[in-house]
Length: 232
Image (cartoon, rainbow, N blue to C red):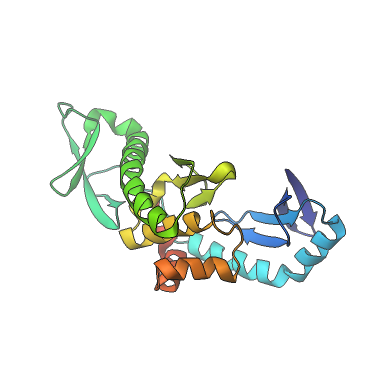
């Protein structure tokens, strides 16, 4: 169940859950403020906690704004670089005789020149297809290690989130994830899989991740500092 909550100049999306025991605040990649609270928690308590966290919220929002300043839109022209699994590949526009609108071949992304106006759609489709295959293999590996079994795994546009653990143990990953280096994608995968054990980012949650990825702190920090570069 979702509600909206405005506290001074801050707008929150409030999610209530019977499984939730404490009030928590998260900020997604786009700067949306999310309040997670128990179903029976009085609104005044939720507002009080949000007020107490205001300095932390403003600090995090400022950090995200600084990262977003470095974002830029890709141009679908010869020589433009496009990421795949952490590596940048140059784009080459080719004659319409190419069998598929877009392919990665001999270290180049090749796009049919007559499909230039639909280039972004073709890239999203290509990334989504390859993300489904690549992530599924890694998910199988880490699911076994963690002793969990996701019900559904979907690749879709998640806005400013890399991954999400939904209801009924469904996992979702942004198609942009496949642009990142493999070791960073693995961190995102493990992060979401661990949510099947522990829904909150508490001490036990991070211990689960550390058992599988002892250097997860470095991977997490790298993603926070560099993730905004991997856009389309």
